[in-house]
Image (cartoon, rainbow, N blue to C red):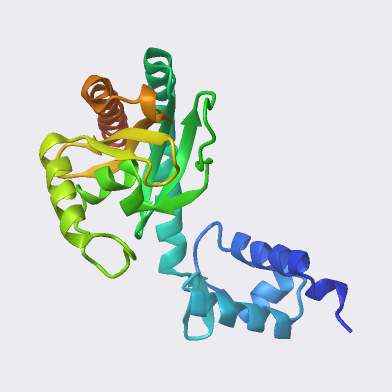
Length: 246
């Protein structure tokens, strides 16, 4: 029989409770964690072993501390939040200027993760905030792949025409603009640009709509200008943070 404290919700609550105890930093023993959370030692020990395997917690002798993965996730969440704040108003302006849906995304492995979406759809789009799409099939993904160290010929891009894709990625790297026409959804096209300075790429933004409303020639400049505006905002925020911290 499955007990209530073994339900998924209960397990999540217990994990969250354990991790919260490390909020102030430092190292804690099994007994301290059990006492502070009110969870039996055996259950705490089992959960800690699972968290260690996931890299969320590390063990040093008889004490436990947060693992590297937790700090990496924290840094990633902070980056996504900063990027979203810097881009949100720019996306609204881009949508107003073009009448198309504006997206913001980052690269996660060989997929794009959508962080923001502004505008009303005139055609059904597969994108949603928090959703993913294969990078090689989207303009956002091509813009991001062109400005990272990932190789478009990797086997992680199933079904892609490697020769064609390598040529397209090279053009994107040179022109700082990418396009996609009906590669993800029939009748839909997209134009995207990377957010960065040529050495660093923090993400990408795009405009998307029906094929007959998306012209890469006329949209390339406003999309690139919008991407530069987001990068300037990010750079300004980082400089302000450095001055404040100095």
